[in-house]
Amino acid sequence: MKFILKLLITALLVVLLSKLLPGVNTDGYLSAILVAISLSLLNFIVRPILVILTLPVTIITLGIFLLVINAIIILLADWLVSGFDVDGLLWAFIFSLLLAIGRSILFQLLEKDKD
Image (cartoon, rainbow, N blue to C red; front, side):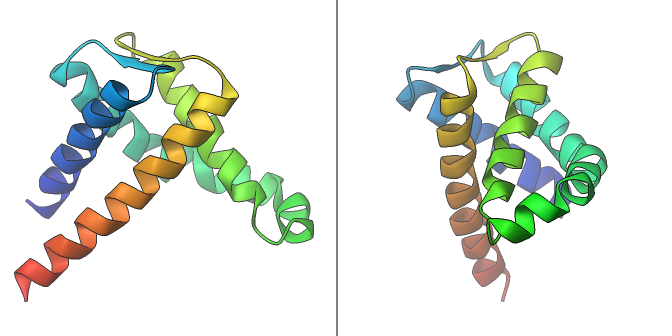
């Protein structure tokens, strides 16, 4: 149940950010839910592989390169979901940064509400 709630929160943030950012477009709520599902799968499967492959660069940049990996994950979700469109690496970077901030705030509120 908690996983489904987190997916719906992520989908809501995807819709909100697509309304705010001119370089990100979503066709509707169904495509936003598909984006949330694809992001969770990509973060589970692809992200660890990318982190291991780019570990030297990540160490040299003191972890800043992980933001680029997040943007690549967003671009992969753009490629997978037909109703989701991101206009380049810069918009994917901005979208991933705002999505991560929004998710951490809302997930923390969800945890506080549970206590």
